[in-house]
Amino acid sequence: MPEAASVPAAAATIGDSEFDRDTAVTPRAPGVYDIDLSAGWTIINAVNGGYLLAVLGRALAHALPHPDPFTVSAHYLTASQPGPAVVRTDVVRTGRTLSTGQASLFQYDEEGREVERLRVLASYGDLGALPDDVRTSAKPPAIPPVDQCFGPEDGPAPVPGSSAITDRLMLKLDPATLGWALGAPSGKGEMRAWFGLADGRDADPLSLLLAVDALPPTAFELGLSGWVPTVELTVHVRSRPAPGPLRVSITTRNLAGGFLEEDAEVWDSADRLVAQSRQLARVRLS
Image (cartoon, rainbow, N blue to C red; front, side, top):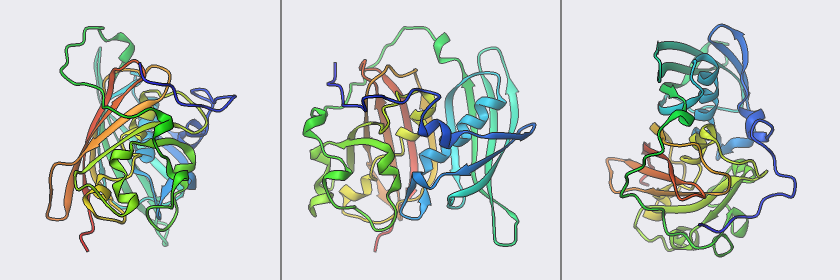
């Protein structure tokens, strides 16, 4: 059993936390929701992709008859900015165990025209109704105890610009994946960390959509720097996480043509693989 991370004395609860308030959508009409994207989830000059995915994930939970995301595939079309946005959802299919829907997030340009930022196709079900049988060869990542890992507060900001999102996370990075912060990247394309929300809110299926995209990019350990924008991200949620900190492991095996993939695994405090993802991201080579 992994060592527990420290949390605030009065931890926030699921449904009553900054994450819940900042991902809450307000119904305007059937399938249409308004939201004010919070500046608290920005990195450099853009809103974090995992936070955006959670926003659309919450809208789809309203629109579909099943409560939990099982698989969510997103294409990031243009960079989102803090401020007003609209989410439009469509129900594609509903069944007994799974329902499928799509959602798009729009913001407005200087002329007041809608600009699509993000488009998602997702299937939802009930994670609590799944059988307990697990047969796997996957193993949790080996990460040192929390007190032997390091967070953003332990060093200088890795990139210029806003890093407001780090104030909302409990992020403790494995020292073995921190060579980039010391000017000596390993070249291995790996990132591992303990992960939670800074206010102590436990993880749920929706916050797993944030967890897979909240660590520094593996490109840093490949000796690259700067923004690594997501082109496409697919998340599989496998189980409702147990209370306590998560462990996130991300690897990149191939960088070619200015693009790399990131494969992520998220493990809970009960040593269960609760989420997996793969994303394609663009990197700056010069």
